[in-house]
Image (cartoon, rainbow, N blue to C red; front, side, top):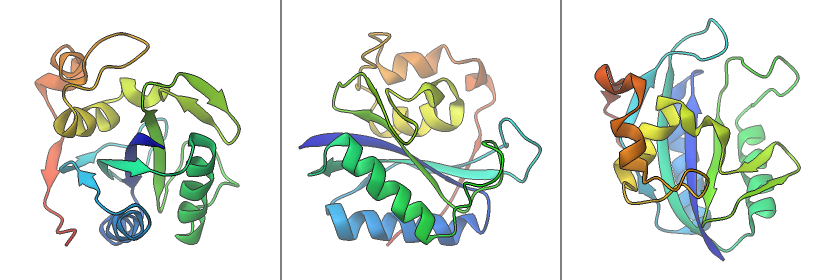
Length: 163
């Protein structure tokens, strides 16, 4: 149905959870285009560093169904939604873009995702989809990254083998 651009993150056994998430995405959607993995600081709380990546998939699910599927994947990996919004996470996967849709829905679904303003979301997406245009700003992702305040000190790349 559409091209989905995802943000993936974890700061609890992050390599294990990111590998499992990528395996589940491949099993369900086939080919997954992946960005490098970056080590980034926690945002909104004092916690251990996150490992963040981005993925692009061809989804046969509409955005609402895909969001539900991703929440179920997070839950299967021990995601605890009972605590504060900004907290440690075994797995966090958000739809940042779905084609060029601009919408809000249940389950904290907002397209495009507001977190695009953070380097941990923008940089991995700009790596794998530099020509993607943010439908709200009209700017390409590589152009947004070129003027991002964190560009001067980008996060470190972490080598993870997803094969």
